[in-house]
Length: 301
Image (cartoon, rainbow, N blue to C red; front, side, top):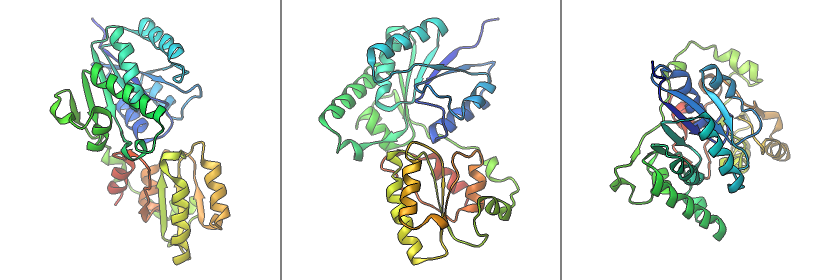
C-alpha cells in the first residue's frame, strides 16, 4: 500500500496566532489516510502549539537563520532531501515565501503554494528602500514559482500576488474558517470573569493578539486610557504573549490603568474569554489580512 502524499507547510513559528491556530486545527482535523503534514518553523524555541501538532501525527522541523539566505537554503534543501519527497510545499511567511518556493522548485517539488495572510500595503508605503527591494524580489519569485496561491482577503492578495491577481487562474480568495462548535458550548460567565479578577458587571474592552509591533498595543493602551477616563467602570483585557508584552505592561502602569487591566498571556480558551469576559473587541492592527480574531468575536456575539 502506497503512503499518502505529504505536504510541507512553512510558518515562522507555532505560537498562538491566527494563521498558526488555523494550521493546528487543520492538522488535528485532516484525514491522515489521505494526506500527511510536516511543518517547517524558523524558531529555535518550541512553540506553544507544537505539542498539539505532534499529537496530530505531524512532524515539526526547524530551518533556522532565515536572515542568512545561504545558510537557510542549505538547511531547507536538506529537509527536502532527507524528509521528502513532498507532493507540495505550502508557505505562510509573506514575502519570504518567494525564496522558499524558488528552493522547492529547484528541488522539483510539483505543487508550490503561497498563502497570503496579511495586507501590508500601508506599512510597505513607509518602508526603507532596502526593505522595498526585498519585497519586490520576494513577490516576483512568488509570481514566478507559485503553482497556486491562496489569500485570506483581497488586500492580502494584492500585496502578495499583485493588483492583477484576479486575472491569474493560479490565485484565489480562500478565507480561513473557524469551528463554530466551540462558541456554542455551555459557559459559566460569572466563573470566567471571577477567574480573571474582573467584576461581573463591568464593561470590558478586549484584545487578542501577539505582542508585536504590527498589533499596535501602544495605541491600544492610549485608546483604553481615554475610554477609561470617560467610563471609570471600564476594564481592559489583553490576551496573548510576545516580545512587547513587558513594554505594554509598563505603559499600562504609566497611564495609571494597572488596577483595571488584565494581561492573561497565551490562552487556549479564547472563545470562552470572548463570550464571557469581553463586551467589545478592539482591533488596531497596522496590518492584517482577515484577522481570525474578528471571526471569533463575531461568533461570540
